[in-house]
Length: 184
Length: 232
Image (cartoon, rainbow over all chains, first blue to last red):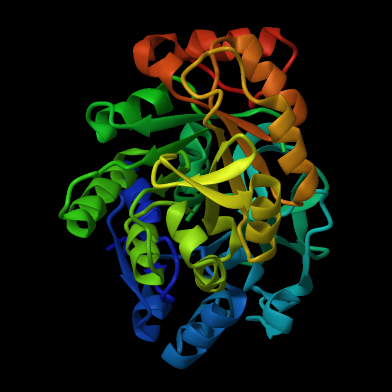
């Protein structure tokens, strides 16, 4: 059974991710259960909320260890927006938060003229526009694509993180998610 | 960011779900849904409309009207909206801005300001306050608003262009993106607004001619504005 688990951490916008996966013909469940996360075919760590409350929630439920364990054993995890940022070692947000440590590097406040960055931006070298909504960004050697100088995509083992929201990026986002799932 | 994100507002015009899909297909970059349930039984209706929109829409959308508490904001965001827009409630209880930002991040909080003669108006623009628009915008951003949706009551509905002076003044006072609203009558007006700010909201001209949105996009681009790559 190709079960997709969308990790629930109390503040994420799980509904839009679920609707987008459904459009691609994939059923999914929203759960914080460590066993469900460990055994799922595919896991999505979505992103809306603040780093500290998200990490507290993931630690309390045991989801944090289940996500890290999945990546250690080579099973796919897709982090979206805050879900990407949580995968790094630490974040400056909320006075400093320890992350999942899946990806070496840290998360810092953006130095753009306007923060948050809200809107569509072209991801290079892909040349496609996706929707971004964030105030913090990842600094890591594992960045594989950028958008106007900010880390847009991170890849480390079986973890893939995107700073943009594929579920809000129109047809381009749908194609991206479809490719992610077809590679599993 | 690609300069010139193009917003479309929905306010009391037909079925929000149907229109949302239509505008998304027509090339809107984001949608703003205001007062989608101006009925007395608010919460439940609101949630079901937001869910229905989220289930069919694949671009970002903001929901405003009737958000008076963190619980209201949670319901809307958990139903699939990207952001909530606060207007009168933020003026009455400014601490609400920070409370929602703490929970969902600043990018999830828009403060909508209806401005007339330089002062903030509440209750759908009907009630003038003594707060200066520029000062209130600055305070809202300091309290955690991630975006300001600035509507000029003086220009709204008149189609003679956005209030560029007011928009520029507000944008200079804050470090968050500012959406200009009120007064769009042509592509050139949108281009003029995008020369001074981050985004422009277009309502009446597309409500009258929903099929004209792709054409409007092209016309804005031919005014020299860089919009996101988009295929019809």
